[in-house]
Image (cartoon, rainbow, N blue to C red; front, side, top):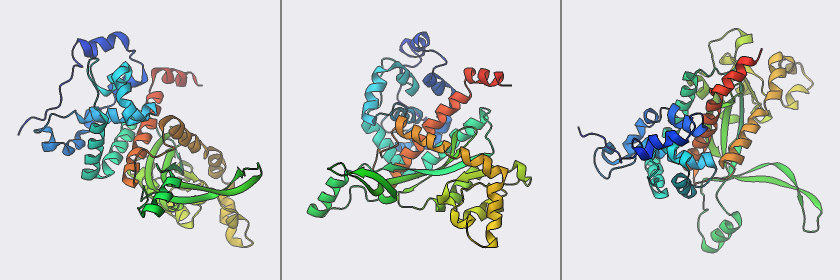
Length: 379
C-alpha cells in the first residue's frame, strides 16, 4: 500500500512554529483552537474524497487544513473568497489553518471542490459526524452538561432576490433559483405605507430552518436538524431528543423524577405526541402549553394545570428564551441570517459549521484558565 501524502508545508521551519512562537500568545482563542482540538483524528473519514485516498494523484492539502480553512469564513463572518485574503495576511488565521508564514492558503475553488466531493460521497453525514465529535470532545475536556434542554428553530433566508427570481420565472419560464427553499408565514408584523400609515402585514420568510437543541447549563448546541422553512417545528422535536440521547447528553434510564432531564420549548411544540414521548423516555416536559389545554371547561385539563404548577415547569420556562440569544449570536457574528449556498443539503453544511463554530467558542471559554479561576471563586 502506498503512503498517504499531502502537500508539504513550512510549519516546522523558521517561517512556521518558530516564528509563530515569538509573536502569538498561547492563550489566544485561535491558537488554543488549533492546538487543543484533535483535527487530524476528526478528519480521517474525509480522506475518501481524495483521489486514491491521498495515495496517488495530485498532491492535496491535508483534510484537517481544508476543514480549518472552511471554518475561517464562519469564525470571521466573511465569504469564502474573502477568507483567502484574511488567511494570507492575518498571522493568527494563518497559524490556525496550519500554514507557514510564507505559504499561500487554499483558494476558494479548492474549498468548493472539497465540499462538493464530500457532499456527493457522504451527504450531510460527514458534517453531522464532525459536529458529534465536537460534542464528545467537550465531554472529554471535562464539561458537564446540565439537566435542562431547550428546543427551538431559527430560519435562514435563502440566497435569492425574490423580485428578480419571480421575474425570471415568468418571463423566461425558468425554475426557482433555489428549488428547495420554501415560504413560511410566521404571523403579522408592522409596516408602513408610502404615505407613512402604519399597517399590519404578513410576516413571511423564504428559506430554511435549523431545528436546534441547546443545553441550558453549558450553552452548547447538542443536536441539529435542517428542513425547508415550511416544515412544522413540533414534528422535529422527537428527532432532536433522540439525537441528544444517542450522544449521552440526557439519561433516559433515570426514574427519580427530581433527577430526570427536562425539555422546554415554545407553544409550537405543544403536541400530545411530544409530551407522551418525553414521558415514555423518563424525561420531564416543560413545553409551554397552549391556552386551549389549560382553559377548556372539562376535567381533562387538570393534569396540564398540575404540569404548569410543577417546579420543573416554573423554573424552566424563564430560561427558554436563552436559545434565542444563541440564534442571535449565530446570525449576527457568524453569517447565519442568510444562506451561503443553494439547496437544502448545502444549507446543512452551513448549519453544522455554524453550530460547530459557536460550540468551539463556548468550549474554549468554559475550559479557559481565566474561566476556571472565576468558577473557583464562586462560593
